[in-house]
Amino acid sequence: MDFTGRVALVTGAAQGIGRDCALALAEAGSDVALGNRQLQKLAGVCREIEALGRRSLVLGLDVADVESVKAAVAKTLEVFGKIDILVNNAGITRDNLAMRMRPHEWEEVLATNLEGAFFCIKAVLPGMVKQRYGRIINIVSVVAQAGNFGQANYIASKAGLIGLTKAIATEVASRNITVNAVSPGFIDTAMTQALSQSVRDRILSLAPLGRMGTGREVAHGVRFLASDEASYITGHVLNINGGMFMG
Image (cartoon, rainbow, N blue to C red; front, side, top):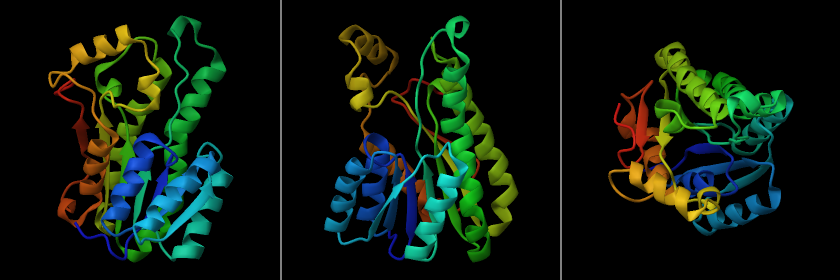
């Protein structure tokens, strides 16, 4: 896959899956704009990308703030001149039982995971429509398809993002813009490493492959969907979950 001349914007790029997606795209030749609220961590990812010989841009980005999104997209266009690929990876959790969930726990998760993705899509679409090319990949989750205890807010946001993926895919297909989702299972990240061993063992028992996935494995799926090899795929949810959900 050759991404030479392409420009990608990756949200939530400071660590975990977002970082791995940014590096995978850069390794294939793309320049990458990195969005996150953790600027210090972003600087390290920026250096990694530049070490690969690609250009990179650090953006202080809060996807739940529409003005922050507009500013980040405008800065990317100012520096790189275009955006070919958007990876909506930024996300948060505020886990709690539904009957105990506070309004702010619901609202914060929906604002970041679903509304934030919409704000980013809306901001990049005019440029993609004008150039008649674009690749949008939304990171969702296996729990949006299979359910999970204590995550009503997170699951609602990610299930909504699957619906948004299909809706936007329908609207922009005639402009040579594809919109897809990648649905990771339980991935070995800082978040899952903080889980107790008993919880990790329970998770592993649900995956027929018997292990957690890696961020790189998710990133490879994202890179494929962003490539010209995937030009006839749109509105699709790519499951990368070790067999946890086979719907």
